[in-house]
Image 1 (cartoon, rainbow, N blue to C red):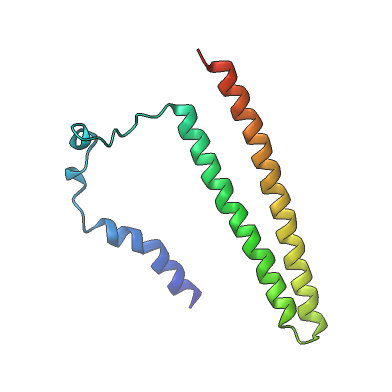
Image 2 (cartoon, helix red, strand yellow; image 1 turned 135 degrees about the vertical axis):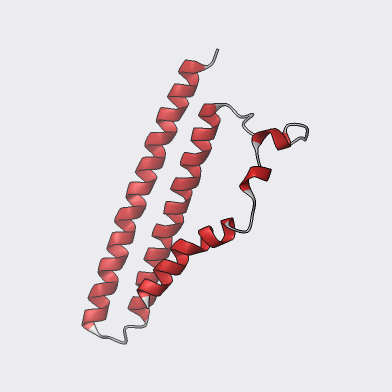
Length: 119
């Protein structure tokens, strides 16, 4: 079952992409409109990508902590399930600490790079 779901998740973007003609979508097609693709500076784009990735990872670790709490609450006193839930919560907390540390470091590095490269 896992193999089927994995293969479907990997093949869905290919199937969706097969419906469009990629030659019709180029950079020059939007040059007359107000979309302005690629008009942001590189440092703003990198900062945005880092923020999106770290935000996604923060949401993921929070969901892991919630899943561990749910597993603990539904364990009905089974010590094996409680221990498994504790491990899950511990892993989620460690992941959240790592994500928050990465956010602080990237924020510091990007702000210093920005302040050093502003003309």
